[in-house]
Length: 345
Image 1 (cartoon, rainbow, N blue to C red):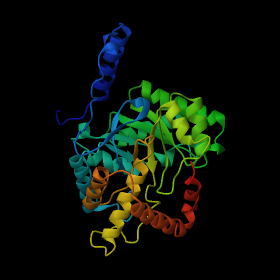
Image 2: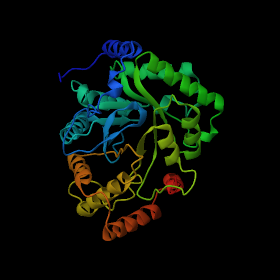
Image 3: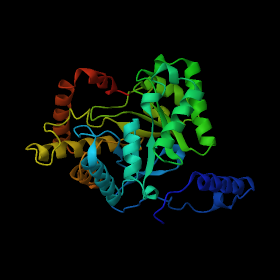
Image 4: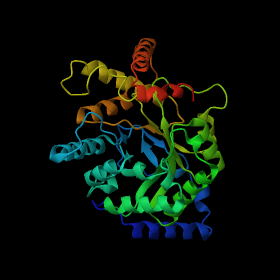
């Protein structure tokens, strides 16, 4: 691959060529034997999972946008993000998810000149459907275009609009406006794939069942999360063939004892807790990938190690993770108590 960014014009052109080929009635591919899907930034030490009907093959752990416990300014911060992204590429990760405008700008810059090695998905949550003035397709598209320009991008791989955490508070009219904005951006070639994020499992279930245009969702998944015996969101995700990225895999860092610094006296135990949590989450084949925020190269290496370790937890490991998860639940900050609603999904 060349070390250059694919332009939106090239993206639209290639998509049109592919569509024309399909329209011409090329049926031979249907009868051909299945081939290995193309995997961006492939590394044989990394696992890759199909991201629903996007057909993208995505690394089993990806880089979430948040960088809690880092001061987000100055050359040191820019170098930190560049180095973390570089190490993610080294270990075979191939997706970054940015949520805020600041995150989009930081990761767009960190990927400059090597966009062809990682997918970039984002929302501009400060100017999206959480806020009343951004609940029309026109307003959403305007803020999306603003972010594309500021980040000096021609397109994003996934535009996923950040919705109300209790998404059920949105009216159905707002839901339609959200989907219209996403569809328009996709038709314009500015977003390859589209989706939404919310902390409301019932509303998400309704949305993916009602609107087949939605290709990806983001929602919490922690080491406490389990499938509901009946009417689980996971069943709807599978049925609708939607990609699924899990946020907050470490319960907003409540899973850990230390401060995430390389010299923390709790580092060894916290690294183990992080790996156990990722292994537990990946036991659910419905999830595409958890997307933890990683603040140093050591944490990237630890996530790569988690993917390579045996998947199923033995009795001792399961007990260790259960104790850590119980501790996390007990010390959740007041503004994260809502995570407890994500024990049964």
